[in-house]
Amino acid sequence: MGWIDNRFEKNFLVTTVDYVFNWARKSAIWPMTFGLACCAIEMIAASTSRFDIARFGSEVFRPSPRQSDLMIVAGTVTLKMAPVVKRIYDQMPDPKWCISMGACSSVGGPFNTYAVLQGVDRIVPVDVYVVGCPPRPENLFYGLLRLQDKIDKMTIAKKPTEVRLHEGMMDDFKRQIRIAQAASENPDQLVQPIESRVIAAGR
Image 1 (cartoon, rainbow, N blue to C red):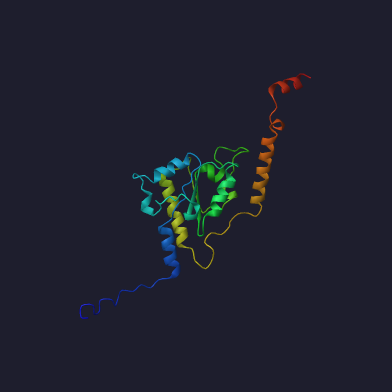
Image 2: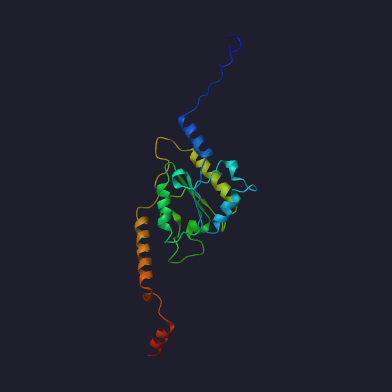
């Protein structure tokens, strides 16, 4: 017993439950294997050896939303793809986070058209916005660090991901989808042939 006497007197740690949980959550964020457009190429490049996203504990891209902590919306979100994005986010277990990567996913980018959703935050709550068109992997890393800072301030006393959407956003989104579907079913109401317009003008 003489060898182990007085060897474990100072081997204890005083901390809080929030600190332990937040440290575990921010140190092993598993992103969803999910990409929509050209920003996804930069997200893929972030996992290569040149940039090495493993330094931040986020190299484990999961093939299933039920194994993912983070959804990186990288690319243009069309109205046709938006319900799929919402379904994937709903299938992710809590706690979960979302990063909007690039101008297209944040505000629609240069595509201010009837077919493109003007911001993914209309359907899912976004924690961090990454600017750029497309943003470089370093920009994604900066957004990931800001997300880690946000996770570090969370507490287990309340739900980590709170819905930060306006109540009327989802209804407005569904109304836009109905308008787009109606337009696709009756395209003659939006675009008339050139010949008919010329004849109408001649009359």
